[in-house]
Length: 166
Image 1 (cartoon, rainbow, N blue to C red):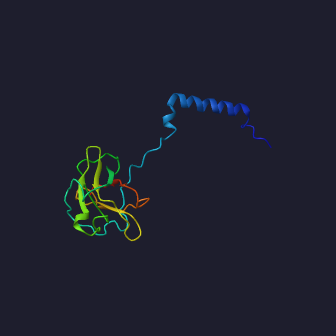
Image 2 (image 1 turned 120 degrees about the vertical axis):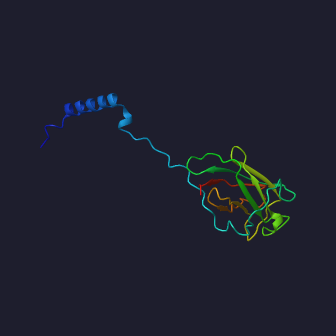
Image 3 (image 1 turned 90 degrees about the horizontal axis):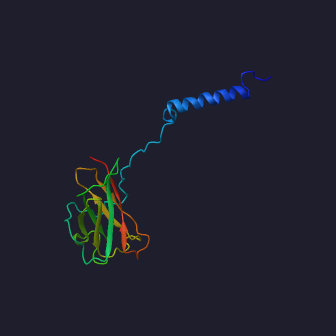
């Protein structure tokens, strides 16, 4: 048995009425735009704090250089770049072990939140060529990173931080 209210004419009238409501009220009342969740904070990596030395000095370069560690630091939520943030860097290199004080140094981020520090070539330790980076000042939550290089022959490594206010 056919339903007498549902036919071509009632569908056309309903469509016109709905379309008129869209024009009158605008589509914004019917559709909710997707909202960004915000930029999530970086989580510390397992092994990132190995051989960490609190208070490593800010340096122009670690050792004789030849390898570049770089990255960017942003604030969690809005992703704003953070200037003047101290990032500590250390690694097992051609010149020293990662536990040695001469393998440790720190640098500050620039106005755009980027940092870059030259250091000796990183070499594999425990089978992997990797670096260590840390943010450890009280303004934001502490984060330790341990990024692994694609190849021990790479001459640079990049790691980004998204910091959560403390």
